[in-house]
Structure formats: structure tokens, C-alpha cells
Amino acid sequence: MPPLAGPKRQSLRSLEAIERAVPECRRCPELRSYCTRIGTTRRRAYRECEYWARPVPGFGDRAARILIVGLAPAAHGANRTGRMFTGDRSGEFLYAALYRARLADRPVSREPGDGLRLLGVYITAALRCAPPANKPTRPQLLECRRYLVDELSVLRPPVTIGLGAIAFGAVLDAIESAGHEIGRPRPRFGHTVEYRLGGTVLLGCYHVSQQNTFTGRRARESCGS
Image (cartoon, rainbow, N blue to C red):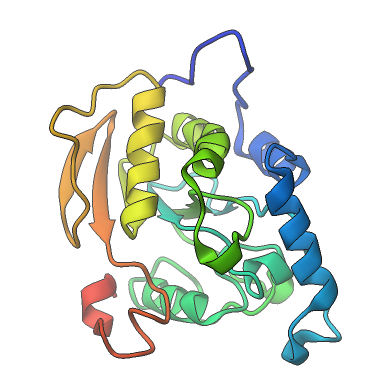
């Protein structure tokens, strides 16, 4: 997939460069302020923890053939630990599923230093900062899109999975921004929908949030285990 063209910015040409750039991003001051505030006030259970409280970079296998795109860091999950889907219930569900599929070397992810390795998978998000009420705005998603465009360009993943409608839409936006046609009508999100676009097969999957899993609304088998 070709990088995003245009004179306004230079594309990041490696995952290492993207991972270095993301935590320093200040394009959404309101989100940086929110993440800092959450990291200062903290939740009682994590009162003794030092929060990451910055934009969270992607994580995983540098030679990944599967790119998983989530919504955004959880306020007391990845915003605390600094690693995607680490330290919250969504991550417990996701990494256990990846382990069962032999795409991770262990089923639990609690902190960045726990030794977890992803096998053929890289995990990122539509938005790199934790948003208030877990609801990113359209302008925030557009500001963050550049990183997903670059990740797609570097990885060229045969398969990309959008967890939930917002992440699915963010992938479509990134593919279109890179100069690829996505067609009209615009592909619609749905669980197990499949589209071949811009050199990748885009799959839709229900998000692994507690709203979908912990409450029993979605069974384990329905979320890609």
C-alpha cells in the first residue's frame, strides 16, 4: 500500500519510527489533557500505579500478517499501562482468544514487561489517546488517521480486522487516504463482513469490550476465538 501522499507531512517508514512518534503526538490537546488528568486522579484500585497517560503506540510482531485495529486505549487500561489492550477486561478477552488461535504465546496480558509475544499479529487503534466516555470525535479520529495509514503502508498486512464500527470505519478512511478506491456505496460494518480493499482483506468483528462480552451479549465463539 503506498504511503499517504502530499506536501504537509512525511510518512513514517518503519514501525519503530511510528512507535516513537505516537507517544510524542500533541495534535489533540484536549485528549492529552484528559489522559494526564486520568493519570493524576487515578482509580482507587490503581492508586499506587504510575500511569502512562500519553498516546499509546501499536504493539506486536514486526512481520505481522494480521493487523488488529481497536477503538482507543481504555482510560485505566492502556492509558495506564502504555500497551494496547493491556490491563483491562477487553484485553483479557482478546489475548485469551489470540492464545487459543496460537497467535500469542500466553493468554494473559497485565503489563508491558510480562513477556507477552504476539505471533503474526500487530495491534493498534483508531485513536491513540483515551477519549472521555470512550467516545472519540470525528475530528480526533481524522487527526490520528496518519498513524494508521503509515502502519498499513509499512506492514502491508494480508488481513486487517476492525474491532467495532468505529475502528472498521477508521481503516476505510486510512485506505482511502492512501489513494485506494473503496467504492460506493461505502462498505458497511458487520460481524464477519469481508472486503478486499487496498491490498488487504478487511474483516469486521464485534469489539471485545465488556459491553459485548462481560454481559454475555456476545459469546466467546462470536468474537473470533
